[in-house]
Image 1 (cartoon, rainbow, N blue to C red):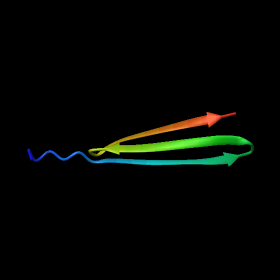
Image 2 (image 1 turned 90 degrees about the vertical axis):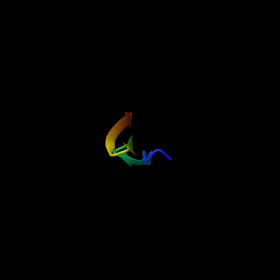
Image 3 (image 1 turned 180 degrees about the vertical axis):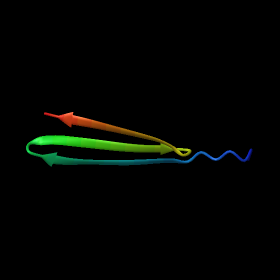
Image 4 (image 1 turned 30 degrees about the vertical axis):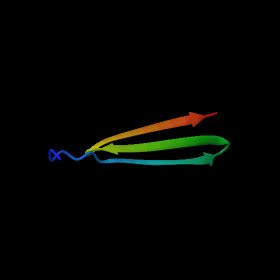
Amino acid sequence: MDGKGNFRSVISMSKILSGVRISTKRIVTNGNKKISTVFNY
């Protein structure tokens, strides 16, 4: 082990609001956060 740990957390959820599906994915890799949102009309 070189002391560098890899940590990755992926949280995804989707909901339907007024007939529109909203998918949200939150990715945390080593403290860096990335949030992506997709709207399906």
